[in-house]
Amino acid sequence: MRASDGAVVYGVEVGTGTTGVVLGHQYLSDHCEFIGVARDLARRGFRALTIDFRGNGASSGGDGRRLDRDVAAAVAQLRSEGATRIKLVGASMGGTAVLAAAALIRPVVNGVVSLSGPAHYQRLDALRAVRQSRIPVRFLAARRDIRFASDARTLMKASKARDKAILIVPGARHGSSILDVPWANAHVQAFLAR
Image (cartoon, rainbow, N blue to C red; front, side, top):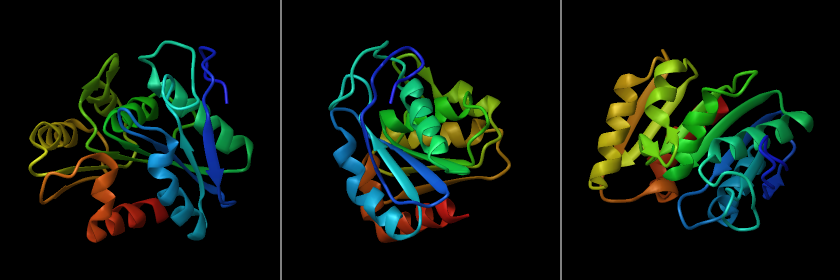
């Protein structure tokens, strides 16, 4: 895929459903972080696309701080292949990226999940984005992942969405590892299926 600023965005797509899910990894990771989740979503009838953010994995080029543009490129790819509903899931920096992208993508996406997404990451301002967006959103973080749990609460409070919720799990899990908690994973799966 190619982002609006010319960055080349690599991803792996699985599934054939009309509901697409973009999966964005955390810092120092790549698309492999979410490949198991993508396969599970495909078994559930979704079209899932897990991407490498620019400067990670096989993606390159563009302004290294504009991860939101990579999310937008992935959404465009899913739509070009027949997805009529789109949801976004991001872990840590990916959580910030999907929140920021959701406020800008047109037509709007149908939902966003932030797993330990900070309120700010490089040039991305998730706090500003949630104050502008009314897209349904879910914030997840771990209680002992203190800074990220605090940011999840701040983002939840600032969000203008009517359909919003926060889930704080015990322990210190971060990002995509929150989905290893069965009831947290069930919470996300239920939201994606709506």
